Amino acid sequence: EVQLVESGGGLVEPGGSLRLSCAASGLDFTDSVIGWFRQAPGKEREGVACINLGDGATNSADAVKGRFAISSDSAKNTVYLQMNSLKSEDTAVYYCAADEWLSCYGVPVENEYDYFGQGTQVTVSS
Image (cartoon, rainbow, N blue to C red; front, side):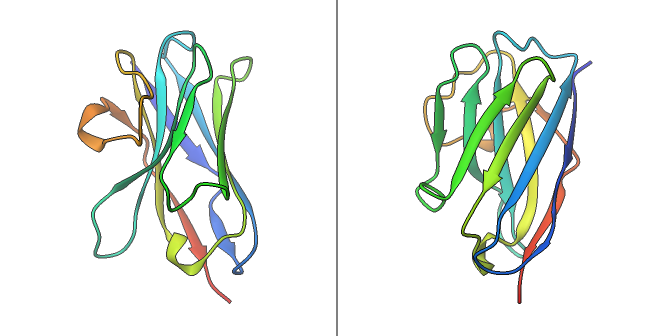
């Protein structure tokens, strides 16, 4: 059974940084994809970034390009989302998701992923 556990969320001032972690178990870390999604109050969940665990290829949404970076550590079975230059509009619940058949070919699409974590709250406010 695949399980995903996010951590690292919190309250940060505009311009600050946070690093989210997604610890995965039960997942083939050599041939799967991990995506990060977020859902702001009153809005639909949207794709943020993804990474192929096999070859390390990544993609990210235009709204976060140059500010957010996704990476993985296969020794720890963990994927990270480093978020810099945070803005108030980045406030959302952030979820990691996994799929064992997809490739990270573009911005992640929610209904293409089989497994989701419980989410971690990120609040950007002064």
